[in-house]
Length: 422
Figure (tube, rainbow, N blue to C red):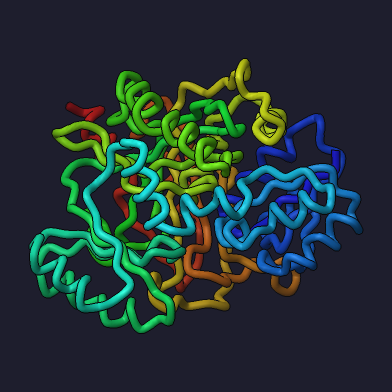
């Protein structure tokens, strides 16, 4: 088969890496790709929101199957456009992608179908939003309704912190804001493939959203992750499937917009049970990197089965080992990151035992050089018998990376490692 992977981040590098190992793949193309993806796929300079360009690329490359990585083209309707032209795609259409594209849509669906989540209000004007915050007090959570690359959330511990972002959020024409009850507990991620009717559980992971050690500083798109997440026990996973994932799949079908693709549930483990924080409609980044390292089965047949409604009797095999990913970002991230610096030592890093380096924000430079070209630039990963082992292998690889403008957290996996030591 001729495959096209859409995207240019660490998630897409991990997907290309996994798909390139499939015996079913004849040609693997990625658009627009990055310097690391170019080592395992043919990259083409077509932007993820160039829907016409993607369609033409599918025709030019005689593509049999498309895997859409990022959320932005999914919400924009890339799957709708390609499927209408006869190209099979993994990923939800625009209607189903509202689960991520609109937090208000997701919250209303949960309210209608009894899916456990935080209490909330939806607002299109500043004054009622301010009044809601003053009525309910802090701590409270303020979210932009639409896509915000993991940065559109304010977890406010005081009234002033909650009120402060409203002015800028409502300054955007047509903006909507969701204000939620603050949920206290431990946050984990859970993934399932969905074929419209059936959900196939994948694995759990835990992301690290704050930019600094000890979970300090502003929220980011993710500074590292590990899988599995010990906090989400097998018993809790069954609860998640029974009370959150399966009811969501049934709800979307009842609403006339069946979901096909990967459902990424952001969960909070509270003292009142598991509650849904949000849905994403694609593999997480950097969670995807850890999942692909642990997956033993061929990924491609599973993605095809999800698209074709054939997941009912499907099964996947996973490594028992833990995988851990350390994100290296450009100084200044999540603000304006430093770009253009040369990154060296990547070959040495990848040669560390049980290590793997996935590129996120890179581009090729002169004479084979790798140039930093994003906020989150690398995902340096390790595989080990425990999270502590995986962490040691990942950071051993990090030490080989020579990049003047790069930084990373030094404590990825700390919660799981504390559990392992207990």
